[in-house]
Length: 191
Image (cartoon, rainbow, N blue to C red):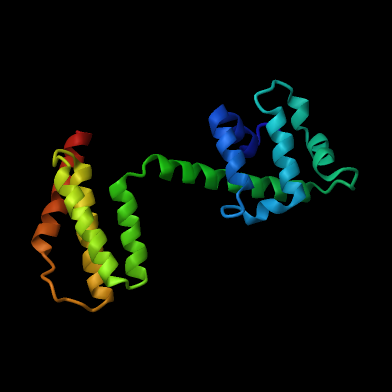
């Protein structure tokens, strides 16, 4: 188990990330499957031995004994448990990355998706109006500005098409302008 994907990923985490991972794993909202005593046992055992130089601590026999007790060793049983925990750690890393990049406008863009999916037109329009106000307050000096504006207006068009509600002008030329500006600025930033 030493140098496994799970062990190397856990060793790469900082102390504060380990604390947050522990909270994430214990949350029944994010991880209902964490309730199994074997998965909890594996997590606690691995956490105790991380950042230590002792390679034998991560030997399969030793880990298996710590998690499953004196049961007959089945290699696939431990591998399945390790794979399950590794999947949860990956989900945690994705969640942390999303949280780190979450701004008010991005959060509201996700809210627009939820409202559109539920066909909540009046609430959708209020959030759209708020996002338009926020976008006017942002400086139009980066590709991100144009991309967010494009994303916002694209969501409006998608919602109108779902709802078959074309009462308003789709403003496609403005939408295309913002998309073109985004790509042009991306090319300039890369050059």
